[in-house]
Length: 256
Image 1: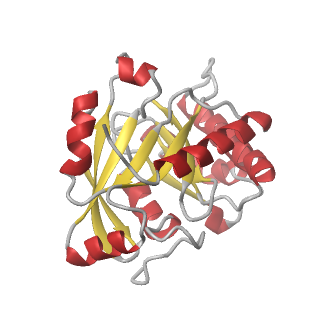
Image 2: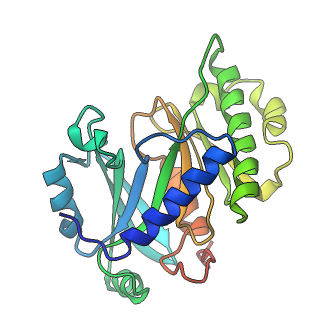
């Protein structure tokens, strides 16, 4: 239905990460949070996804994705959690990523994974129960939870994790206590190992890559009204991922 040459490799890596995450005590959602699929033209992927039941462009957003100094556009597709396909393990969301111009298309095709290709899979982390916390205290607990998960997963996976990107509700980031208290939430991380953002549309989306080259990612999601945070997509595209994944190195945009 959606033949992708490198899918078996990515799924194999994802299953290995899920197994090691469980060993580290990090509970993973049954279905992946999302997949990022690069394609040119987009209908190679969008058409088959539509036939599965995905709602293309459901959040009325497109997300510019400057990868390897080239311009791509990410349009999100969403699968109804009540659908049979979701119960079978299909991704909750899919980022359909296509090149804007010929230069980006050449860069995408030059990596040799095929067209389309599965760039990365993102496993969902089960969020902590809210309990009686107010928004600020729950935000603190979510961030501390993911900082600890990142550390434990790095120990069992043996790879250097990516930046912890924490997109939080405006009520948390805008709270008068945030500036003073938030550094303690990420204790043990260097300045370049985390980034706080306001989550557009509300909710929580805290994510980081666990395999270098941007092949497998994990994300905690709660209460979001859109698939991604534009600031997160920009940061990830520029600094965390590349279409060249064989060398295990992210290729930062030289213009930034």
